[in-house]
Length: 294
Image (cartoon, rainbow, N blue to C red; front, side, top):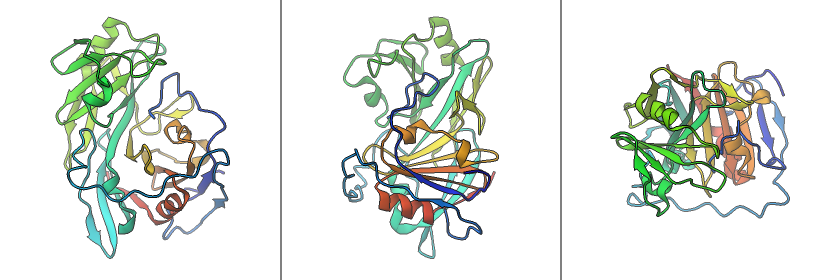
């Protein structure tokens, strides 16, 4: 489909996982004037998704690297002011029963070193922080006071860099061939961060390190700043500012690799993708409104 910023696409999971620039990917229509809908169906080879889980208690929500912002209430809807990893902002509105804020939010983006071919690396905030990276294994070494090196998180990956930006932890899960020691040190010394209002993480970089701007693609994959709501066995909602947003031209493997029912749309220059149990996905894509604020 092309062109219309309010197109909604529902689709099956892809037949096979998409490789995103060689980097391992971790594993709304209320008042729209024009609507275009493609009927989707549940993936036939995938077992039925689990029933929606009850809301977690406050104690269960105390998980490192997972932000649970407090939404405002307005006429039966929750309103969230969100901040993307590049510092841009948006306002979300949705029916309170969707409980999107309770899913928890994590930022993600991509960076690379100028003059280093093949160097783009995905930056994510693994749930659990250091425990989610270590998986019971010891740290390899410190690179700086805030950056540590860890064993690969899977057999398909290289060693992981973990950046401590209190209270957030940012992981660079390297490729199998890996960065050189000198390149790791450039990452360690030049990736910076601040915590914005509401607890959101904003990342910046000094040369020769660069971070992807909104809408930037690498190997056809959206590589710019994103916010991930939920995940694992829950609904996964991904928001990404994309200038000239067109769902027909956007790929996002973090959604595709889940092999769950999914739907996508664009609102006010923000790409919206949802994956999970079909009913919840359809209610989310229909009830969510997004408005860029900066």
